[in-house]
Length: 259
Length: 251
Image (cartoon, rainbow over all chains, first blue to last red; front, side):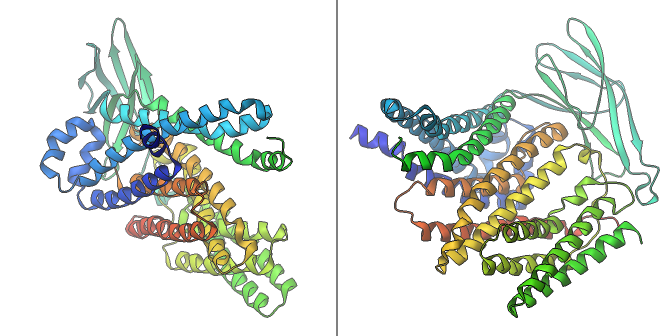
């Protein structure tokens, strides 16, 4: 009974159905977000649990899809982990019956699934842990950070296009100079799209595009999930490319009886 | 003639050329159909590249605007399959979705998005480029799946299109996440666009797993990839229709 349950939890069939249902729930969720942005937009600037206390708890009928999504992603994580354990166990037992190349080719999907699992953990950490603060910008504006670090806006400026005439006056680039205080004080200039990291905290300069004059804001963030998601996803793609590029050669070897 | 004029003239000529190529093929004038196809693709490419200078300065994002670059990408695959001597009638059947997408592009505002400091990174055009390649592969995958359901064995290459479309779409997700992090300080935004991208990614990830289920034969997989076309069209063209009212320059 336990073995049957274990095999069911780690089955590809369950993976397929979970992914399909998650896809449909995300589709429903995307329309929910379109029609109720006032509920879901704050999710981008707060941790999931804080958002739930402020917005989610009172709108359970509108966030049902998000609760289901989180539950299904949790199940997908368990499914992925069990599937990888089962496959690596099977491959390890039969390792002497195949060449190193075939063994490597067959283990690639498991490695890709480990990367996917790392990505899921990264997303979990991103949405539930860390630090997120958005501060308005004007010279002299102070801001606080974790571990008693302090900062202050020193200067801000925006450069505009002068030509061609069709875009004359549009914002080309904006930058701010910040004074950051920890054990020592540093001055740092950052511009749009130019992220700066300091003591594990990332600074991003943002701009509200809807306003005629650029409405700058500074996002101060500590997000432990970022390296896990980016590295996990990148390696996953490389492994997938490798797997499908080597597929022809691996199939030829299998057909020849060289397992 | 300004480059915006060349871009528009190239687009209209390309539509004329593709339509001519299809008509000639239907009248079994294969050589002339090939000549029309190559000429149309050439003018289409000139039109697409000159879009980059539509407003007088180079805006890379204009090159990869989905409404105009998706048909170009389909045409590119059609020419590539023709050069690889793939089944003639299947290759020429790509004209139907291509002309449909081009008809949409002809009715759509031709201008380009104004330059923004948020587009001044290599990750932004790369994101749109890989997303368009992914969408083109999904559309062709569905198109060949349709022919495979009509017992055309040669159409079984739809699986390759779906696999490489998924890989391209995954690259778009990573590149897009890096762009989002640079510009907005987050890898994932709880917005309609990002959620729909995740939905599409999960759908085709489900397809990849479907291939390992013995109960899901090739016909079921073909139906699944055909259903995927609904998602691709709903999400990509739904997004284009929403953006129709956004400010554009030129055109």
